[in-house]
Image (cartoon, rainbow, N blue to C red; front, side, top):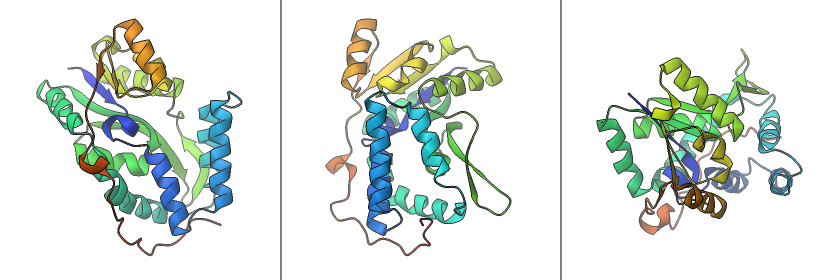
Length: 239
């Protein structure tokens, strides 16, 4: 038995779910333009090297403190059906089936939230999910803290290593499919690193290392509905 790890954004799906989520939250009024601006500034500071993405993710989770979990889960379920489900790359299904026939464990390894990742795992019939999860108190409110390691960059490697250790599998028997240079810590420790529609830094690095660079295609129409359905009426978790 081996383990095949899969990134989500721009790998299994042909877009960044985080950007789509922010856009939709703005549309529905669950996020103010100021909140969106702050999120964008944190991302900009990350790209400029002023903060780590782990810090940015932790900061985003902290902003959930005191908000109820159930409405956010409900909005995420609708978001998944409307904006994420149409985005699966055609080639992803074939690779998943190939690993499944080989008897490999299929594991989602993503910086996305547990609320979204569990829906993806159910759709794709994955065996496990390693992602960013939110602590929720006895009253069903977010505490503003993450559960476990922040699953990004080096954190993804920590999560992957913990998973294979528990499964009794060596990382040399594992594969990892991703588009992002930020996932290099995992790619450098697995036996089969595969760059899927990689960003320019990962593409260059993959070519130097002799790693496979693959194209899984895009869904018809890019996967985004021409006219999004009317937004549902759901409680707000915003201020």
